[in-house]
Length: 369
Ligand SMILES: *Cc1c(COP(=O)(O)O)cnc(C)c1O
Image 1 (cartoon, rainbow, N blue to C red):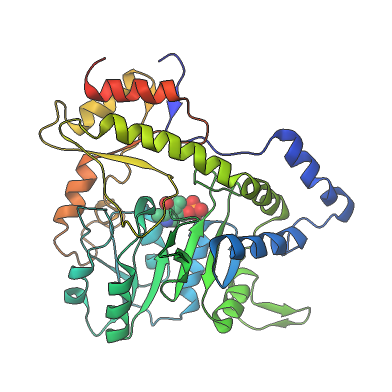
Image 2 (cartoon, rainbow, N blue to C red):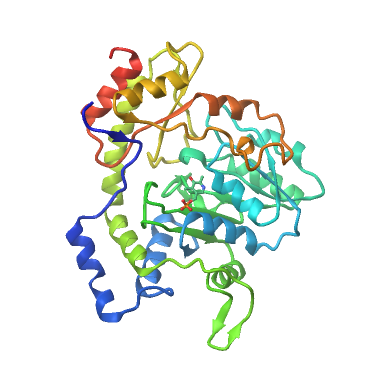
């Protein structure tokens, strides 16, 4: 391939559309601090995602870090989580002075193995932080049952799960809170951005304090907060991208289906099978290179790169094995997580990826080229 193909390409409105949309900011000079567009995007997202209340943030990581902080867990408490995720999930736990306890994942879809959660619960456990990895939805019913039984909070990292519904219910409705990421590389973006879905009014108020220095009015700072606000430029980017999201989704679906059709029968290449009761957002296309494939995972990764196709081993290594966390926390046997991590390659998928490029990638994987 002559052109370089990367794993993703940010969705953007046309230049003219965005410029027209940000024009009012030059009249109001209101650039941030939960302005008009911030409020408008919150309302539109509540509606689109079918969730009760959304609090926008400067990025997905701050959404998660502040959402965890909102529960005021005692320092050193344990949080059961998955190591098969972006480092942000584990960082958010550790930066709240909590201890991650890594649970293995399921081979079928890469999400936390709900059958292995209970054995990790100790008197110090306060929460479960699962990840809807690649937009595959965790076993939310079983996780709810466990959290009710042991009185734990559940905070979902839904950074990959924008727009997904399960049994016609927006995925952000599960657990005590969910966070989204609207980073430029995600399926829906506000350049940088994120959101917390808050289940109750108290949590919403707490999130507001935490993302705006704890300031209640001109003379009252009621608590110690951070600055996690989304700017009006980002909110407007979100409003523009949201308008085109359904179109983007259709285009991604076309690419996704073509990959499935082309790779389904290739020996040694496994494709995940997510919950059939949930919709998809086609954010990622992971493949798992098994032992009976003609090349190793790393050889295939290299071969694709030699053909100008820049794929990612996402997530390798596991967060539990990253230099900053290795051997510091309790691990269950992470046999499946390590296996998936050693096999995974994410293939390029984005809104206007060319069909012929997908064909070429399939041919390379099939070993034809
Ligand atoms: C992207 C991502 C985040 C962090 O979101 P940012 O908006 O980049 O801060 C957190 N968790 C997961 C699983 C992610 O993929």
